[in-house]
Image (tube, rainbow, N blue to C red; front, top):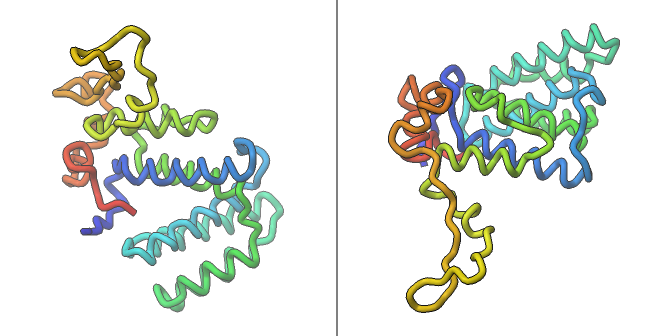
Length: 224
């Protein structure tokens, strides 16, 4: 599968769904949805760097230097939060010196030196989802991650959005010609120019670079 390594033309619904699903996992393991005020920004930034280093290992090379930038930002925020900058600084310097060869060691060290628990990782994946699909940011809800995932799929991949239809029980007495219940189906959301007329989300996500156009037509850049 071809990897489309692009940071500056965001608009990947598949990537957003991946990160939202990861946030859902961490929230489920935590047993609740974390509140952003619980955690220092610097820790969430380090968690985002950790996530992006994982992306490097599967072929998204530009995410290496994005991760370095996140670590630098984490150092800055730690200074204002009166937190330790040591872990972020060591990780950044290792990556600047060793490049891609330092990714695995840096990820291991971050897991040891920083408490990247489920709450931190949930918020970090949520921020990554927003980065990947900023046009949908206003509709991404921490208190309804499943609903947000299904809304994105309904808007960008209506032909594959079978979960919503499968989850609806057939109405009593509504049968087909063979006398079997007729299953309810989900309403398709992205037909013709309908999406573009609904606030421009599809237009914003599919307007440049060709990557996002593929997201509406064929599923976007390669699944991560």
